[in-house]
Length: 247
Length: 86
Image 1 (cartoon, chains in turn yellow, green):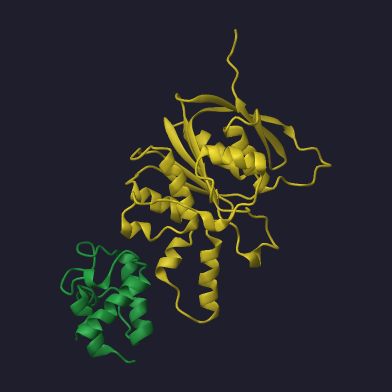
Image 2 (cartoon, helix red, strand yellow):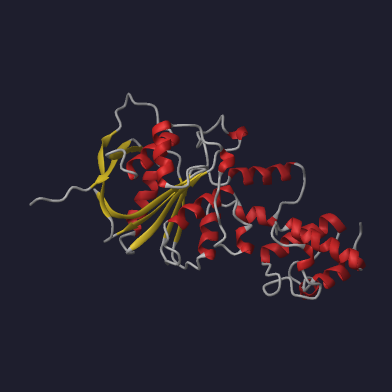
């Protein structure tokens, strides 16, 4: 079993800017229009702000709502694909025998957003960038719990944007851009347990879709679901609030 | 010269995504990097690429001379005037 305390969480997506918006969406399950992303990054100096595109704006918007302003926390950023649209545009330039944009190249790496975040906040702690397909959220939690062994608190961000359409036949992707930001703590917040529940039965072939994962995880965080279960490498893990020990 | 300087300012704004900056706000004599406009090393590479694409100027990214050419808009204009191949 692995345990931690959840001090705070926020989630952000186009038209889903506050927890109330997510609660309504969880009930209605309406389509999200990518164009409705409304993130105010006025707190970021202009010269840095220009380097954030949709993926980075989601992360920065979600983190901003945590109100941890200048907290110097170790950070874990987890994303399935990162900014694949940017990588694709660089590849298209190579295909046209054009020179590659140095800015584009520097921002196409998987730790670009976390790096920019650390510059904006003058954060000098460890920054970890995770890429995972199956069990993205669980992987981010495992890493965060690991880092809580030597830090009081960590910032954990799970975020993605949809893959460009030419890649969508080859890999699952999110329906809309989103970011979930959390502060995991040793001492403060709701006590959580993350427990191994056995192996995924062999007849179960299908992986959980990332969109279902996000829905279930936000559903759990917002109190609509009593727990969050997920599959990682053939194992089932369950996140739930820890019950107080009576003895 | 003023036309070339304005052209360079527009180029800088466009290639560096300086959405909130007007070309009139960039002073010809003020430093482009760190102080003044506050550009960084990645911006320098991006401007180098733009100079190559637009004016056919190839620069050595490590030389002191290049550093001097990038000091401000007037220095860039001198560089373009004297070394452009297109």
